Image (cartoon, rainbow, N blue to C red; front, side, top):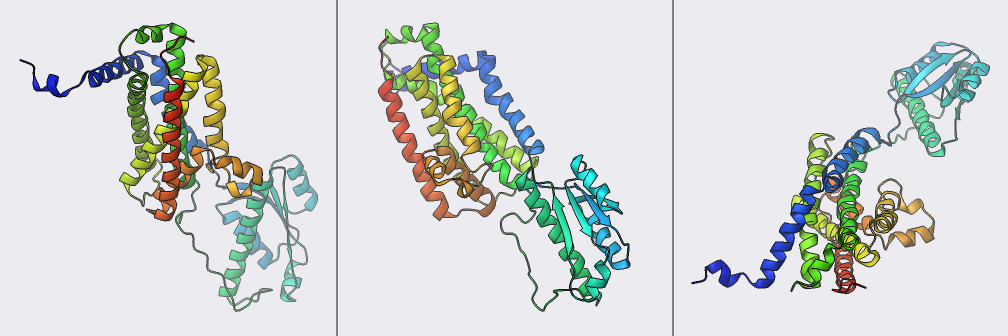
Length: 381
């Protein structure tokens, strides 16, 4: 008498389950898989989360105070008390220029000798010189310097002292979705993309190619398993490993970096599953087509990991890129996943952003899995 399990579990299901068990044992026995799947993502989280920041703080600047009148001294003190600057007060412009050339300061704030007299006359200026080898850093420092001067002018008006250019209109700034003005809120969601790309594509890029090189795939060809059963048996363990990596990222974002989470966990999980399927499809497609571990990993790095870092919006604003490069980003799945993650984390369930990007990922997943099925055949050549 056969058991209920034997009646309802088909031979196909048993073959798939056997392949899943075999691949899971292989993952656990292979130190490189554990290193890429668990250790390396953890290192990336700590490195990018704590080491990479787009915020500019404690900028070394030289404040040239050639005539220390009370109001000029108050302005210099504003730079010294600001958390954005590490100000060194000097009394002559040549000394400040020397510090700039030696790269000991990134900017010079020059308060002219006639500052107080011209301020009372309603016509004064402050010179800001920045070290512009890094143009983006220089623009940020210049903006911060303008903010420090504006804060000083506001204090002067509050004390009833006349300030040139002070009119009846004031500007009230408010930051949406990132009130803390912390770049980690922007970077950590993008880091999830890198981790999922690493686990999904780079690990699976080695799977079939490794089997080809070791000759163990030939042993499967003489069994009744079909190509799609082989793919399922190799995909599911790495899919589970990718979900473990996702959990590590989410826990780190919440408890290590305190990134706000305003959307739905189910939406985030569903979108991550779609992207993981895309990454798995890319890795398996490359691995099945090339049949060489070295070539497969190099090609995978070129078409997945590097674009995910450089052309997804993780580090650089896509709208500032040339139009030709912007066009290329539309075929990169990481672009859609980054937009999804940043929206769900910081803005919430904005469906006008979530649905189009999720649809693009779903379409890519279907196409990639079909292509992978097409190139995976039970043939030795």
